[in-house]
Length: 115
Length: 113
Image (cartoon, rainbow over the protein chains, first blue to last red):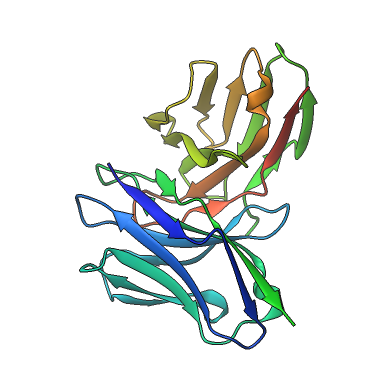
């Protein structure tokens, strides 16, 4: 069965510092991987997705993630944190069997940005 | 283009009642999926519909049901509400499946008293 593990339920960084949010996946087939962001009282917004093309994926708002098959990882990074990045971030893998929109989400990482 | 619309945004019900939530996808999108978000269980998949057919169902009791109409709008129904059904219910739409980006609505906040 497919799953994702997000290490660190809370991460705090200073404004201007590197953001690194960790995600490891488990999948018996080549996965599709996603990072979503959720601001308070809102739905989810897609930051970026990996669908077996380039292993380094660039997303919106300066975020990027690298698919590393050998490490089964898909960590999210941003070189310089901004106050507006404070939100909850979810890593997700598409469901088993292919050709499905079913997403399996990690437990989320709440990012705090200190001034 | 208008985004995914969910109605109502907030709902308060009592135990034993039933509730229907509505989702209007982005124009032209044929796939709608539903998720339940709670502090304890996180984001859990409920259903996936494509062109009026249920393609996948999550591990939820039969009290949870859904459907999709010919205009791609979708509804989900929860009968005999329990306190544990209190959650944010999110709907997502996409044009197709797998690689297509899913766009999420703002959710319906259901509180069961």
